[in-house]
Amino acid sequence: MIPGDFQPQKPTGTQLAKLGVLGVVLLGVFIGIVLVLTFVISSWLGRPVIFGHDGPEQPIEFPHETHVKELGMDCTFCHRNVEKEAAASVPALGLCMTCHSAVGDELEGITKMR
Image (tube, rainbow, N blue to C red):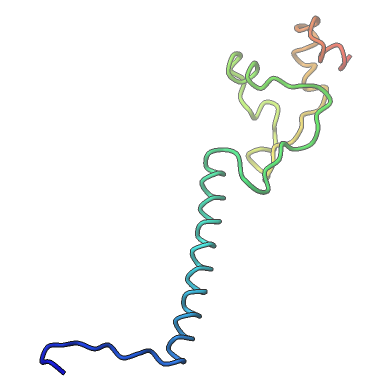
Protein backbone atom coordinates (compact mmCIF):
# COMPACT_ATOMS: atom_id res chain seq x y z
CA MET A 1 0.00 0.00 0.00
CA ILE A 2 1.29 3.45 -0.91
CA PRO A 3 1.57 5.89 2.02
CA GLY A 4 -1.48 8.17 2.02
CA ASP A 5 -3.45 5.75 -0.17
CA PHE A 6 -6.88 5.17 1.35
CA GLN A 7 -8.73 1.92 0.80
CA PRO A 8 -12.22 1.88 2.33
CA GLN A 9 -13.37 -1.33 3.93
CA LYS A 10 -16.27 -3.14 2.34
CA PRO A 11 -19.40 -2.92 4.50
CA THR A 12 -20.55 -6.07 6.21
CA GLY A 13 -24.00 -7.58 5.73
CA THR A 14 -25.14 -6.25 9.10
CA GLN A 15 -24.04 -2.73 8.21
CA LEU A 16 -25.89 -2.92 4.89
CA ALA A 17 -29.04 -4.14 6.65
CA LYS A 18 -28.86 -1.26 9.15
CA LEU A 19 -28.41 1.24 6.31
CA GLY A 20 -31.44 -0.25 4.53
CA VAL A 21 -33.61 0.05 7.64
CA LEU A 22 -32.39 3.61 8.19
CA GLY A 23 -33.25 4.48 4.59
CA VAL A 24 -36.78 3.10 4.91
CA VAL A 25 -37.34 4.95 8.20
CA LEU A 26 -36.06 8.23 6.75
CA LEU A 27 -38.26 7.79 3.67
CA GLY A 28 -41.28 7.24 5.94
CA VAL A 29 -40.45 10.34 7.98
CA PHE A 30 -40.04 12.39 4.78
CA ILE A 31 -43.40 11.21 3.41
CA GLY A 32 -45.06 11.96 6.77
CA ILE A 33 -43.63 15.48 6.82
CA VAL A 34 -44.80 16.11 3.25
CA LEU A 35 -48.34 14.92 4.08
CA VAL A 36 -48.55 17.04 7.23
CA LEU A 37 -47.23 20.11 5.43
CA THR A 38 -49.68 19.57 2.57
CA PHE A 39 -52.60 19.44 4.99
CA VAL A 40 -51.43 22.42 7.05
CA ILE A 41 -50.69 24.64 4.06
CA SER A 42 -53.94 23.75 2.28
CA SER A 43 -55.90 24.43 5.48
CA TRP A 44 -54.08 27.71 5.93
CA LEU A 45 -55.02 28.71 2.39
CA GLY A 46 -58.64 28.01 3.22
CA ARG A 47 -59.50 24.68 1.59
CA PRO A 48 -58.26 21.57 3.39
CA VAL A 49 -57.21 18.68 1.16
CA ILE A 50 -58.91 16.20 3.50
CA PHE A 51 -61.74 16.62 5.98
CA GLY A 52 -62.85 19.72 4.08
CA HIS A 53 -66.50 19.95 3.11
CA ASP A 54 -69.11 22.61 2.60
CA GLY A 55 -71.29 21.55 5.50
CA PRO A 56 -74.94 20.54 5.30
CA GLU A 57 -76.98 21.26 2.20
CA GLN A 58 -78.89 24.50 2.55
CA PRO A 59 -82.56 24.97 1.60
CA ILE A 60 -81.74 28.09 -0.43
CA GLU A 61 -78.58 29.50 -1.99
CA PHE A 62 -77.22 31.99 0.52
CA PRO A 63 -75.04 34.84 -0.83
CA HIS A 64 -72.49 35.47 1.93
CA GLU A 65 -70.80 38.02 -0.34
CA THR A 66 -73.94 40.20 -0.37
CA HIS A 67 -74.65 40.00 3.34
CA VAL A 68 -71.10 40.21 4.72
CA LYS A 69 -69.10 42.25 2.22
CA GLU A 70 -71.73 44.53 0.69
CA LEU A 71 -74.05 45.01 3.68
CA GLY A 72 -71.34 44.72 6.34
CA MET A 73 -73.20 42.22 8.52
CA ASP A 74 -71.15 40.49 11.20
CA CYS A 75 -70.94 36.68 10.97
CA THR A 76 -72.21 36.35 14.53
CA PHE A 77 -75.53 37.98 13.60
CA CYS A 78 -76.60 34.76 11.85
CA HIS A 79 -74.12 32.23 13.24
CA ARG A 80 -74.69 32.80 16.95
CA ASN A 81 -72.62 29.79 18.11
CA VAL A 82 -69.53 30.40 15.99
CA GLU A 83 -67.51 31.87 18.87
CA LYS A 84 -68.56 29.18 21.38
CA GLU A 85 -68.55 25.97 19.33
CA ALA A 86 -66.39 24.22 16.74
CA ALA A 87 -68.76 24.87 13.83
CA ALA A 88 -71.02 27.69 12.78
CA SER A 89 -74.71 26.92 13.19
CA VAL A 90 -77.28 27.31 10.43
CA PRO A 91 -79.61 30.16 11.38
CA ALA A 92 -83.33 29.59 11.83
CA LEU A 93 -85.70 30.81 9.14
CA GLY A 94 -87.17 33.37 11.51
CA LEU A 95 -83.81 35.10 11.82
CA CYS A 96 -83.66 35.57 8.04
CA MET A 97 -87.18 36.92 8.04
CA THR A 98 -86.17 39.61 10.54
CA CYS A 99 -84.91 41.59 7.56
CA HIS A 100 -86.53 39.79 4.65
CA SER A 101 -90.09 40.45 5.79
CA ALA A 102 -89.46 43.96 4.48
CA VAL A 103 -86.80 43.57 1.74
CA GLY A 104 -85.98 41.16 -1.05
CA ASP A 105 -89.51 40.20 -2.16
CA GLU A 106 -88.30 39.69 -5.73
CA LEU A 107 -85.58 37.17 -4.78
CA GLU A 108 -86.28 33.50 -5.54
CA GLY A 109 -84.86 32.30 -2.21
CA ILE A 110 -87.08 34.67 -0.24
CA THR A 111 -90.23 33.51 -2.03
CA LYS A 112 -89.29 29.90 -1.14
CA MET A 113 -89.01 30.85 2.54
CA ARG A 114 -92.47 32.42 2.70
